[in-house]
Amino acid sequence: MQNILPIHFAPLQGYTEAIYRQAHARIFGGVESYYSPFVRVERGEIRRKDMREITPDNNRGVNLIPQLIAPNVDKMEQIIALFIEKGYRNVDINLGCPFPILAKRHNGSGMLPYPEEVRNLLTTAIEKHPDMQFSVKMRLGWENTEECLALLPLLNELPLTHIIMHPRLGKQQYKGEVNLEGFEAFYNKCRHPLIYNGDLLTTEDIHTIAGRFPHLAGVMIGRGLLANPALALEYQQGHPLSDKEMQEKLRLFHADIFAQYGNLLEGGDGQLLTKMKSFWEYMMPDGDRKAKKAIHKANKLETYQTAVNNLLK
Image (cartoon, rainbow, N blue to C red):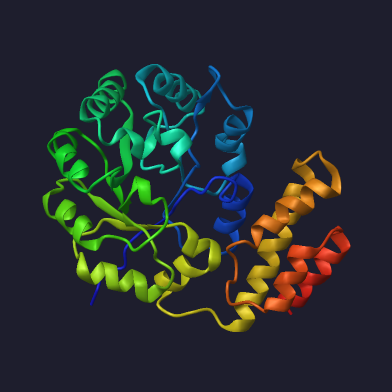
């Protein structure tokens, strides 16, 4: 009998925002912790939106671990100061983001080919903040899988709480297959609790990974939970929701998020409509195609709501 692993909700910019996290925790749950989309310094300042997103009042009922991305110590320190001010003691450092515009400036997985930069970033964080706990989210490398193995001696000697590994290269972004052989090489030599992240879309996928890597500390899921918000709950309870339960929870989930964004956004119906359409980009990939197309084409909130009702009836 397999152990039931903790599920962590991966951060996705523009999707897993505070409003989404709170609604998900309340209506679906099954998630051990939610990671914030990374906070970064732009033009010398942290974006106001990022500050608002990690404010504890906006994350009630959510075990939130804030994540930062930074190409150097100064920017990292600026963000850690914000996290401390907000009362956080657990911080995740992003060494995995694959977006070229950031990676080419040595952010995220773009830093993985530079072991001394990684050493400087991580050792400074740990030495300057002994009362904080740090984890790392990373990939196998930017260019090749040897990069993560070259970093392992450093990572193993640091007092990290855990490592989250997405077994693709940065330059792949989200294309191609995950590299389970590359993950296994890292897994076999990693001394820290290791969390697997990547292409887990069903409960069967989770069981398969847990079976192949029996010493995992957990799994992290992003797109799989966006497609099926009940995935973590269904895995934890050992059976799927009935169609009726699922439809009811989805209606509540959508209504909650719609109402909260309606209160938050100040750009009128057009802005709310654009925001809510993005809610369906991953959701219910096997849902009725006609209804999903009607959601996508809706140019008024009334038309949008009718299309959503047709999808969830």
